[in-house]
Amino acid sequence: MSKEKKIKELPYRNGVGIVVLNDKNEIFVAKRIDNPKNFWQMPQGGVDKDENYYDAALRELKEETSIVSVKLIKEIEKKLTYILPDDLIGIIWKGKFKGQIQKWFIVRFIGNESEININTKNPEFLDWKWINLEDLTKIAVNFKFNVYKNLKEEISKILS
Image 1 (cartoon, rainbow, N blue to C red):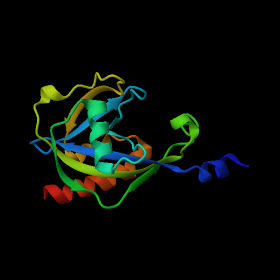
Image 2 (image 1 turned 180 degrees about the vertical axis):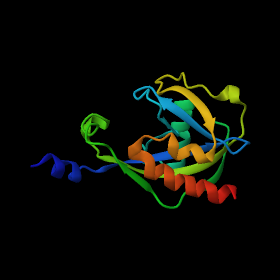
Image 3 (image 1 turned 90 degrees about the vertical axis):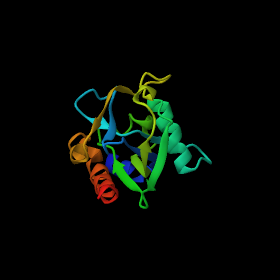
Image 4 (image 1 turned 45 degrees about the horizontal axis):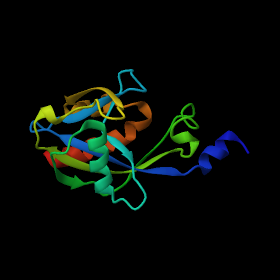
């Protein structure tokens, strides 16, 4: 079987993502430890068996950033997908998935910034910052560009 056909047959990993807005409507992003180039991402991760999407999003947010003080603004209706580049398939997620199909949520951060701590038990990030909406697609790794473009449109609807 060709490598291309094998990849096509791999399933998508079921995931969640969370857009965290501060009181200035800036977006929380963090730089991954395993890709220290100038790419940033919003908190995201997998969904455990029998876990609902919003609970998974809140769990991932806490595990990755220590953030717990949030209020739900919107659950994005459609799921967003991305496929990993060929050089990462077989490496990420032990080669079980070709990409992710994600359910995204937009929340408002209502805590104090001192709550944010990326030096967690299993750290995923080197650094974090708040960015303006117009910069969202500029900071994304290329294989997630369309996901971030869709999210930018969804966030724009809320903020306008």
